[in-house]
Length: 385
Ligand SMILES: Nc1ncnc2c1ncn2[C@@H]1O[C@H](COP(=O)(O)OP(=O)(O)OP(=O)(O)O)[C@@H](O)[C@H]1O
Ligand SMILES: [Mg+2]
Image 1 (cartoon, helix red, strand yellow):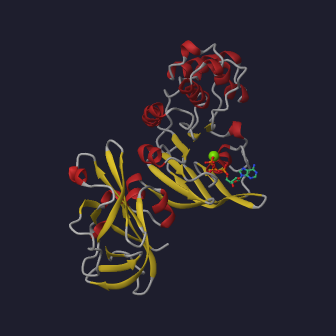
Image 2 (cartoon, helix red, strand yellow; image 1 turned 180 degrees about the vertical axis):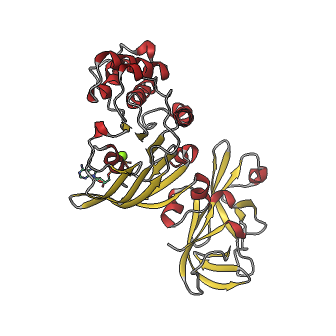
Image 3 (tube, protein in one colour; image 1 turned 90 degrees about the horizontal axis):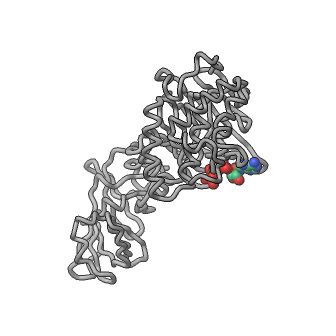
């Protein structure tokens, strides 16, 4: 972004970039540290003006990837294009990219206003223009009454808004956010994730937001990028990543899935029959590359497993009745909106069922007693990778 003159200094958000600006393309982007490949040949396209969440467990390379985009770490291999321009070697202050760092990284001895002005100073803006732009940004994020305070005199939520103001004041086309909600209490997290999403819609710039929190990613993202060990495991809309995890890792990471290691015993009539872990599962045959005798995993989401009291305890699964099993209810976990039923098969295999609180069939279940579990064919997913 060209540095603006004093006459051309619109308030943050008043001059939203054209839709499509802020398009990020990564080709084979790699970062190695001694003994670790933190980011391993990442290929990714982030459409301009979209909200993308990088989701993965601790140590999977999220921060490292963000640091390379922001210019705070060098790219060892591969190419980073911003709106078609190779950006690998452009210094941070000359990229149209800003970062909200993990724990915000505010300067403790500077005032809120000086913190917000900092990025403009780095870009060589004259003092008056800096002040005006910083004040606009403070106004935009409801921080005007706090302009002269130090960060330590603010609440966590206010500090987060200062970090946002500091990042947005330079009018980036891409905003990088590293665990922006991680330091907030749960209620504030829930509120701020809605506000972040609304802010992104208002500014119409690209947000790339890093988190290890599945629910946060599902709630906020246009596209989720699931990462593990420096590699992308899956990219998709929240509902697609949630409903159809691409592999064993995503299935395990995205929530309460019952995953069974099994073998294909039959394929007939549009169905695949899988035996394993004391269960017989029937899945729709909509995946290519499945063969009889093949070892694979099958997954059933906990919320797709229904539960009712079993009549008689010796009635376990049989090949005649796939997708059903009698188990013992070990622990009924009451969570308000939902109830989680932790069950166990005679062979020790654990199965979790999740029911809506309002679905009162669970009300008559008793811990230690047999429970009949059942799920639908269309809810069984085969994981080939
Ligand atoms: N400066 C460094 N020197 C050596 N190794 C590093 C460095 N920075 C990161 N790593 C390693 O690279 C890997 C990825 O780290 P990174 O900080 O990107 O993970 P992360 O996904 O952000 O994790 P978290 O959720 O815990 O923040 C880790 O194995 C980490 O130990
Ligand atoms: Mg990190």
